[in-house]
Length: 304
Image (cartoon, rainbow, N blue to C red; front, side):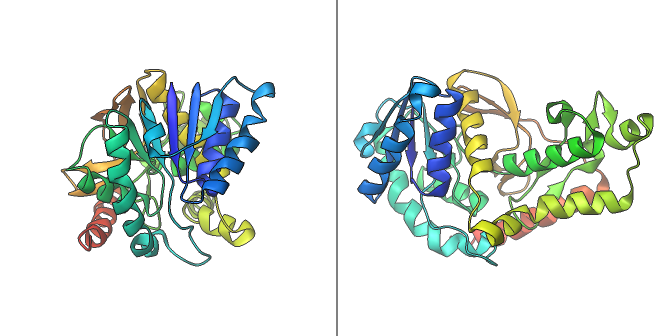
């Protein structure tokens, strides 16, 4: 259970820390263009192992990715205040054209998880550099947005978030689609569940939750400069799905023939990456929004 992380900025470091705290792997290699940064992060995180899990943590180079089961790509520049994920495209595409061939050369059998934003477009770029879409390459996509959605629904319904089933699909960004029509608790539609529990749930509540999910990154970036804890935990969870040979449903991003671009849909993820795309039942208005989201992403991918 060896995992590599390329890029030890906020997201890469948070993912490494989460992997150790959760015991998601046995060996962890951190790589960064700034070698001192990678060494410092590795040492700092190593010092947490006596009170968490026995994980071998070290800094290294691309050859040290040999025999990795998973490689997380978190390299690139951060999203600046007021900057959309799509505006990050030009700044991060060049970085990935450099690092992806090195990862493929040294860890040819690893599942590659793309975390760098704009994640859908960078995932499409990674696929292109690798020779085309393949099961072992996917982006973190809307897994974090889905978690945010479920957390807010759970708060409203006064229930453990692990018992809420709801998804965010499409772009990880401004055009993402909250699939309200398929949100359920205990097999009941979310609205129906609230009525059964005499919980007041209004259109205003719906709009507020939508806004909080859709604008979460902007609020966090405005307040502290970057988002990293949430996505760090998500990356650890995705890694666990692979190294533990689970079969789990995650809204990860990958090229989807129906939409002719990389975007997020519920997908079955296992040991070798994406096993299958499950899809999702949407209301007509939600389907229209998803198609619009795909159209936006296609226009930017075309520029690559």
